[in-house]
Image 1 (spheres, one colour):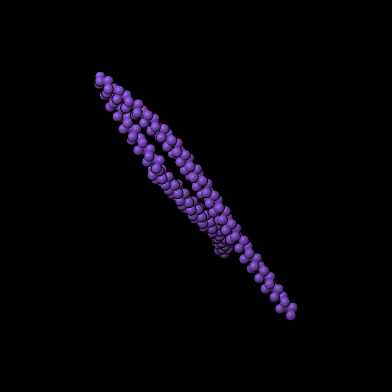
Image 2 (cartoon, rainbow, N blue to C red; image 1 turned 90 degrees about the vertical axis):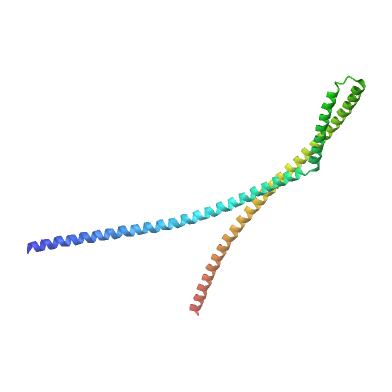
Length: 212
């Protein structure tokens, strides 16, 4: 009989220990579930933040691409205009004339080896004329070069003004985005205030109904 009672007590103790172990296991499971829910919520937040950052990066990348395309277009337009300028065309013609005159001068200098005096005199007159022509051409080239430098300065100024305007437009666009975000925030606040007022009005109507 005593052995049966002892065995019963041992069994009851084991059952109590198992119940306690089950309770502890349930407690740990609940803690783990809470941690899992918290991790899941944090994961969702991180995913949303990552999507927001990705969208902002894509917008910034698109805006940078657009700006680079504008700069390329401005450069391309500048070179096209510069290559078609009358000054550049005229300068190329004058450079060809100078080259031809130099070649002619070299040929005449070679002919000076001829001992005949009339030929030498004629060559000297020709050289004097050519020197004068070369001087005039050089002066013309210098004038055209100055005009070209002025045109380049003007184009540089225009490019700078375009860049300033682009920065100004970007600042205006940024300010408009900020104003739009503020408007959305105010709209949400107004909506919340209206809901609160409607709730208060409903409570007042309810109280008036009870008073009647």
